[in-house]
Image (cartoon, rainbow, N blue to C red; front, side):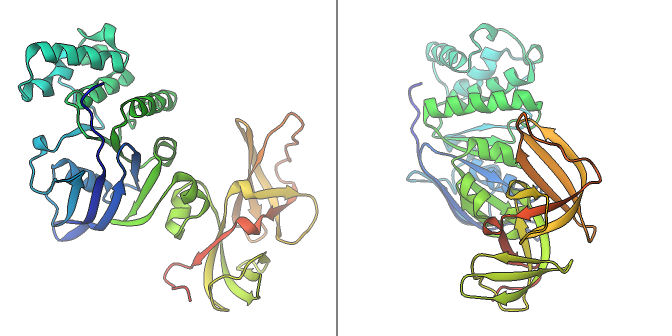
Length: 366
C-alpha cells in the first residue's frame, strides 16, 4: 500500500482530570516508527483517556504529543493523520463495505477514481474483495473488524490507534484476527498503538508494553521483560499468574536471604535482597516455577492437592498449604505424566532463584 509514512509517537508529561479527579498523571512513553506498542492496564487506569488525547478527542490539561516532527497538541482530530479503530467498529449501517471504506477519503475530497482504486486496494489487503457490496449487518464480527481497519488505513495515516479492537470477538476468532493484524502491521510498517485490558492480547501483538495503574505508568518494557522482571507488585500480579507469600526478612547474608513466611516456614533465596532485617515483604513465584516432589526438601512447602486440571500441554495443580493458603503449580504434560489424586499430600518445591520480592503494601523498601 502506497502513501504510508511511519513516524515516531512521543507522549511526554500527559496529564488530564475529570471533575477534579486525576485520570492521567504525568504519562510519558515513546512508540518508535513502524513499531507496535500496547497501552495496558485494568479498567479505569487512564489508558483510554491517553488514547483519546492522542486522537484529538480529549484536550489534556498539560503535556505534549508529537508524531514525527508534528506537534499534535493544537491540531483538530481530522488533521492529525491518525487512523482509529473503535471497540464497536462504528461502521455506518446504511453504507456498504466499499462505501464505509471510501467515507474518510470522500471527507478529504479525494477524487472518485482515486477513491475507487484505494477502496479496491484496501479490500484486497484485508481479504474482503468479494464483500464490497454487503452491508455491515451481513458480515461476521471478524469481517466487520477488518472493514473498520481498512477504513482507518484508507487515508494513509502515519499512526494507527486500536481501542480494544478484539474485545467483542470470541476467543478463537480473536486469535485469528490478532495474527491477521500482525500481518497487516508488518506489511504496512505503520506505527501502531493498541489499548487493551487483555494481557495475552498485548503480549502477543506488541513489541513493547506500557503498563498503567491509577493514571500512572508502572513499567515500560518488552513483553518478556515485563513477565520475567516485573518492577512492582502490581505488574507481577497483573501480567500472568503469580503465587504470593507474605513474609518477613529474617536473615541477610552475602549471597542469600532467608524469608520467614507467615505460616512459619522459611524460603531461602540465592541472593541478598535490598531490604533490612525485619522488613515486611511479599514474595511471588510463577506457577511454572513450582514443582511437586514426594519428600520434604529445602524450599518445599507441604501441601494438599485440591484439583489437577489438564490445560493443553500443561497440567495445573491447585494446592492447599498447611496454613490454608493456596498455591498453584504448573508442569509440562506428557504421556507418562501422573496426575496426583485430590486430597493427597505433596511437597511444592519453589525455585527461589525465580522469585520476586516486593515491599508489603504500605511499607517502603530500604
